[in-house]
Length: 148
Image (cartoon, rainbow, N blue to C red; front, side, top):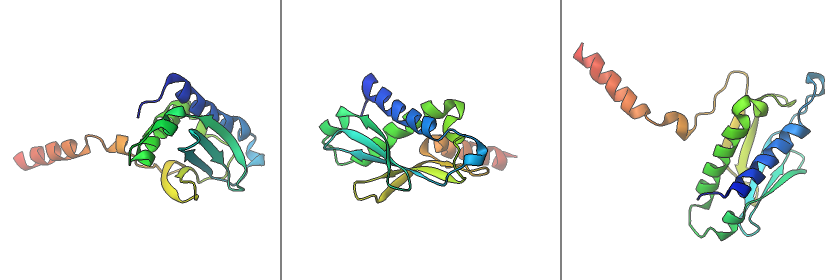
């Protein structure tokens, strides 16, 4: 599902709101994760912290219009793209939040669909984009190794 420019901007603003709210001094660290809940019928994204406080909202009309069976998979791809954009400078990795913390995609019952971003000092969340081309690279490596 392709997002309009205004929908992508709305999602970016919601993530930037998190950066704004949770950018502080190291001595003011809080312990929380961030739960991103897409609401198909409303065409919206609601973001909550561990205390179930709504901290950001984004309007995404394309979600309300989407009729496919793979809604959460499409939303996850949308959110991963926006998270990559917002985090290009590392803003989401420098929040005043105790590590590890994560950005979690949840459904309306708050059941976890998937982790969108995991932030820790020494952990990297493996995503599909990171794995693209890995099979070909491994096959090429094995062929070269066997040829020697």
